Image (tube, rainbow, N blue to C red; front, side):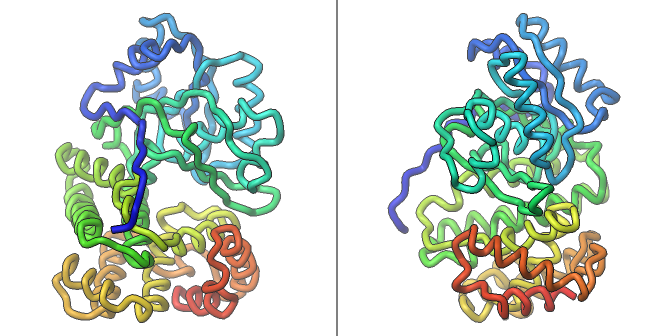
Length: 382
């Protein structure tokens, strides 16, 4: 195990009815006015908006609405929200929604306190020195944003999907009520499963130092996701399965499974970010296409770990069998495994490859992910 410093300051309030406590949590932090960020008007139709409004009012907390945040959140919306946050002099950002809303909230929180163009923070032109406090009520489990500092935003003009992260962008309090996730569509449930698995395997397969304890945690997360996804596809109202799925999602990217590992990278996310940026495909759907294609290309570089994955997760013997089993499971639950299922054809590959190469430089792994390598991976996904 390598040396590490583990830091995670987020308080998670988990369970049924916890969204009713959001006003209390904000008041405990001295918040008087928030920018309330959300996606569609679904939160108004299903009563969550009313619950949140009532909780805020009970503690004398005002709010300014910022709705319309989309999946694969975009820079123009972040800029629009920063203008609102500054104009109304809010004390904090409150995200009510899934990972896209929360990622936007983090970018808004940092951008509001930065004097320049918010995109500077994504391209390394400036560092995040401070941010408004961030709070959230999660309505979809997938990204792990509720307990990490990261946020990913797409610049529509440049077709770049880049990330920020800072000690200042951890949420102060995240409310996770699995019951709020029962209305998640079948498609987004299976896309979420792929996203969680992607978060888990990046370090598991690519780390130079990967302790057995961490491998066991990853295998537990993936096995839990497989079991609970199948349960939820049969019965979306199964609270116990929904709760385990949600907590597995949080554990996959709150830093715990990476503390003590080293020398890892995020190639699946690097490649998928190009698919999202160029074709606006759902992030998890893009990952379920990329993962098997990348595994087929990469597995010979770490054969023992791929064999371990095959044995521990699927009870099989060889790396190839484990890769095939995961791809088959993706097919079984109905998340895509081919670029054609995303509407991406071979004629789209040159532009996609160039975008990925830009991401490889951004991720600092361009030495391994050359044009030939990226081409081979994407061709595995045709």
